[in-house]
Each structure stands twice: as C-alpha cells, then as structure tokens.
Image 1 (cartoon, rainbow, N blue to C red):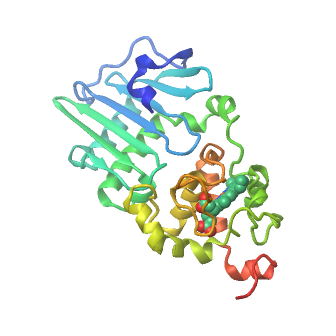
Image 2: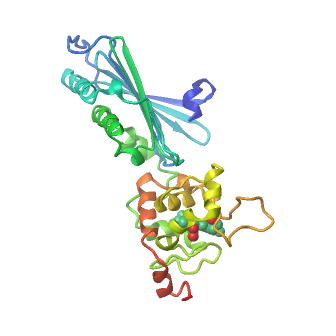
Image 3: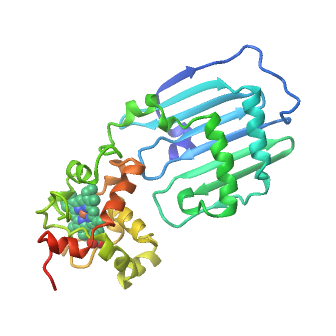
Length: 309
Ligand code: HEC
C-alpha cells in the first residue's frame, strides 16, 4: 500500500465525499476523555478488498476514507458522519475493558498475502498503537483476542466499506469469483481445467499441471526437502496444508511441484497464471482451498485421472 504512505506520489483522479449525518452542535461530554481519538486502518492482503482508514474524534465525528486503486486512476471515497454520545461511550468502554494500552504493539505471522489491522488510540496524555498482521492465524492468542474485541467494536460504529455496495459495485470488475460460486464454478470461470484434472468435477482433461489432490499431497509437499529450502530462502511461506493450497494459487512460483519444473527457464518459473490473487474474494479462495483439500488420490483413481500404483 505504498500509496497510503506516500500519498503525495499518488494520483487521485476522483475524490468523492459522502456526508451522512452531521449535527450542528456536537455534544461536549465529560465522560469522553480529553484528546480522545481512534484511528483504525485496514490494509487488505491478497483479496480484492479496499484499504480504508477511519478517524473518530472526541466530538464523535467520524471520517472514513476508502482508497480505490484503478488501472488509470485512483479514487478516494470520504464518508463523514457522527456517533451518538451513547455509541462513543460504548466504544470507550470497549477500549478500557481489555486494557488496550497494555496490548503488545505488533503481531505478525510469516505467511504473505494476509491483511493487517491497525488501531491507534489516544486518551488524555496516553497514546498507543497496535498492529496485527494475519489476524485469522492469530485469533486464538489472548492478547490478539483483546485487540479484536476493540476492533470489532470499532467496526460496529464504523462499518467496513468492503461490506457496502457503493464500494463493491464499483470494484468487483476485477474479481471473478465469490462465495456464490461453487468450487466447480470457480474452476470453470478461472480456467483451471485447462491445465489441471480435478477429481469429482468436469475438469477432466488438463495435462499441463498436476492432478489436484491436495488431501493426499499438500502436507507431503510442505514436508519435502525442496519446500523447506524455499521456506528458508523466504520464497515460500506455508506451514499448513491449507496455506500451501492458497499459496499455490496466489503465488504459484513460490514452490514448483517436482516434475513440473520448466526446462530452460529461470528457476521458479511456472506456466500457471500469476494473477489469481486478484480474482477471488477472500472467502471464495478459502472455499476453493477447502474443496481442493477434500480431494484425495483415491478420488482421482476412481475418476480415471490417476492409475493405481
Ligand atoms: C496454464 C496452466 C495452469 C492453469 C490455468 C492453472 N494452473 Fe495450477 N499449476 C500449473 C502447473 C504447471 C503447476 C505445477 C507447477 C507449479 O507448482 O507452479 C500448477 C500447480 C498448482 C497447484 C499445486 C499442486 C500440487 O500438486 O502441489 C495447485 C493447488 C494449483 N495449481 C491450483 C490451480 C487452480 C485452483 C487454478 C485455477 C484457479 C490453476 N491452478 C490454474 C498450471 C496451471
């Protein structure tokens, strides 16, 4: 998200302001601490979701900017509205309750293509920032749970623009599949069957890539010496079968399946398209990965895609 950091170098062709409800006289509350300010920042990973940043100030005003990067032009959607005093005190309680100020500042996880959640809270003289990379992998940790409790409360007050139509309508163009598609639809729409055979589906003819039987081989792949070498070199990042499948789809060059190395080509090259990461919604990719993880060698043999050894 270099654009977010170096805003000056980015060209925003279009800036859209949406002002929802802005009462003229905002309350001055004694329960709201001095200098109260919350900044929430969402940086998406491999999904098509849009980065956004919201600032909530002491007077309950909210300003949320969504950044949309187009091929030729970038757009900023700026939405402003006000929280009721009740909503604001509610949020403050949610911050105090898990003692946000004592949560560690950074959490990260080694797999790429994940989202980062960032929260900065100021109350009186105190200010604290926490960022969590790959929350879905870390949500069982108690301190991440405390962070997520605050994050969820912020989302209740300032809904993610990724769930709203005005952002989605404009920007689904690039995304090809969503959870409305069955795994079989996804394979069809994305042309996986041109190269792969996939047991139990109509993708029966591809011969360029391996038969997709992740239940049998994903765990084996990551345990292999070749994979561990890629891991060590920082090129591959999966530590579970599911991460391997997702990585194979969104970053196919991270590890090349043995016997499918291209001769006379630079190491790490593959014929598999490199841009699938932008074709899925986050949930759709999860759904397809789960499906591929349900397919094993026996299913491939039944469908005549592999022969019994
Ligand atoms: C143009 C051909 C091509 C297309 C299209 C293609 N792949 Fe691949 N895929 C390959 C090749 C070749 C490999 C093996 C080399 C490598 O690892 O990149 C591979 C590897 C994989 C692997 C790792 C398999 C294993 O045994 O470890 C998965 C999973 C995978 N592809 C899924 C998909 C999915 C899902 C799609 C569609 C969204 C797709 N591929 C589209 C050619 C393709």
